[in-house]
Amino acid sequence: MNATDKPDAGNAPFVSADWLKENIDTPDLVVVDGSYYLAAMNRDAEAEFLAAHIPGAVRFDIDSIKDLANPLPHMIPSAEDFASAVGAKGINDDSRIVVYDGAGLFSAPRVWWMFTIFGARNVSILEGGFPAWRAADGSIEEGPARPRQPARFTARLDREAVADLPRIEAALADPTIQVVDARSAARFRGEAPEPRAGLPSGHMPGSVNLPHTEVVEDGFLKDPQSIQDALRRHGIDPTKPVITSCGSGVSAAILSLAFMRIGHPPQALFDGSWTEWASREDAPIGTGDPSTR
Image 1 (cartoon, rainbow, N blue to C red):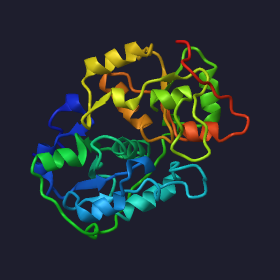
Image 2 (image 1 turned 90 degrees about the vertical axis):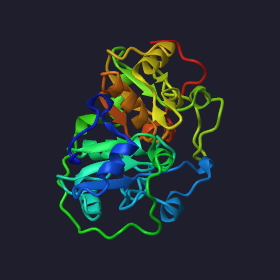
Image 3 (image 1 turned 180 degrees about the vertical axis):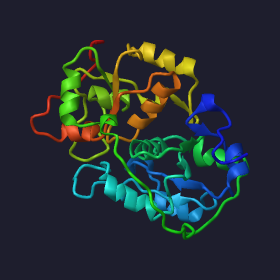
Image 4 (image 1 turned 180 degrees about the horizontal axis):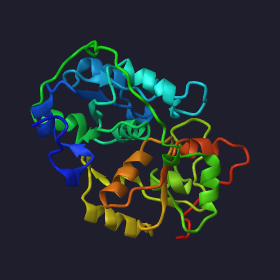
């Protein structure tokens, strides 16, 4: 099997651990560790990579490959900076990219989304992440990433896939568009603190809540019927336009995958998400359970 072949088109954009084991030595394959953890998780992505990673994997840190001039967390970089960063890791326009994370399914979707919006033609996510790789008896490598020959990656940003603050404000005022927030229900209602100090909890008035934990089980994205059931519970119509959001643009990408799985890809992801919204002194903040739009 060539690395350009997908074992199960219906499971896109995921590949299984067994598929990756069979294709790990294919020349155009690049495995990317995109692990990132919130402070409350008490995990160190860099240390974990040095201790154990998939052989040949390169490290992608969303807090390094970002807009360094923007004070908001891990905002997307310019196309030029993205191309330079991934090219330095040996990733080119023809690479078959497989992204994973150490949690199973948490930050890998964000890295997958970044590659996608910058024009990568062949990028997938390892289903179940590093835990699934270990469970499949995949081989493990220690230490820093192996040196790779620098390559040329041509980055072209799909601006329509990235929602900024003015677009979100317009969407919230438009009853035909749904802004879907992936944070926990308690944070959305303003009953639990945000992980970032000084940031109030609550929600954007007019948004709806779908905690990302309701579409993920044991590190795997749930099946289409379970995702549809979760949408119905929260009054979300997948046939209407959707923009996903969360705390800082990470778990929003999980919801984007969920909408893709049921055949209704979202219009965009709000890159700054709640952190950008709530950082403004004049930001309107809702609390409690909002009425269904």
